[in-house]
Structures are given as structure tokens and as C-alpha cells.
Length: 176
Image (cartoon, rainbow, N blue to C red; front, side):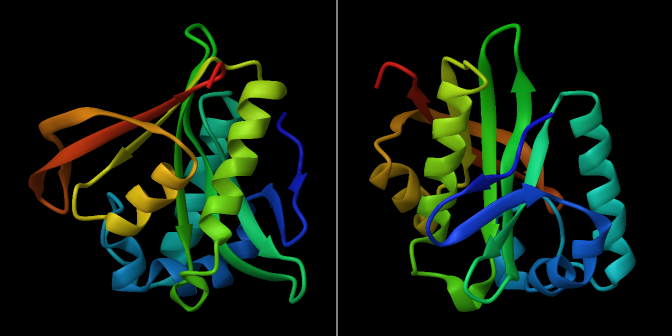
């Protein structure tokens, strides 16, 4: 089981259904989910179902997601985590989302940096990947800031909101 993680400003803790109201507010914002492979939520029950699904994957050790809690306000400001964990190949894919009112304050960079540190030093992974739609400039900037390597574009690699989209793949290795 992955433990809670802390920085000076944020607490990454296991996502729970108690977070559903806060995460519903975030996931119901079309701007936040624009580049996620889900439509914006219209009912808090959708958030509960998503959290239940995420935690089932975590129980199977296939993924793990955290609520991002801003320490000054104790408010859930987003989520992040390992969308997939592949211990056989010592790698993970990460993902993250931040409430719009917190954009541009470095919270995504701080959360991803924390995920990297934990992946390499506690989970003993060798590689962390991130898949990003080419138009998601803000997310690409986060990865570039953390010195991820752009490996290429997978053309029409995934279906998002009913259409095939290109995916840029970035990675960071433990040795980097």
C-alpha cells in the first residue's frame, strides 16, 4: 500500500469517496477535463463511481491515485497518481488534474515531482511515463519543467470523447 506523501504545500493522500463532493466540483469543470479521457461530470455519483473504480485498481496493485490537499486550507485541489503500475517492467504512467482556480501556482509540478521521487526511491521503479494530448500545453510545460524527455507522438493512439487523438509520450528514467 502506498503511503501518504507530503511537501511544504500539499498532502497527497489516498483518494476516498469522502472526497467525492470536492472532486465532483473539479471533474465537472469542462476546462479541467478537456484533455482527460472522461466527459465532465454532471452528478456527484459519477465522482463516487470513479473513486470506487480507482480504488479497485489500487487494491489490485495496478494503479494508485491520490487526492491533492492544499495544506493551508485543507481543501482538495485536484488528484494525481499512477494511472498504471507495471512492477514487472519497473515502470508507471502518471496523471494529474488541478482545480482551475489553482492553475499556474506550481501545484501540478509539485505533485508530479513528489510522484517521481516516490516512484524511484520507494517503489524502485526505473521509468515514469506521461501521455499528453498535443494541445495540452500546460501539462507539457509541467513535464518539461521536470526534465521529462519527449519520445514522440503516437498518431491517433487513443479514443477520447468519441474521436481518435494523437498522444505525445514523455518519460523520465531513474538515472536522470
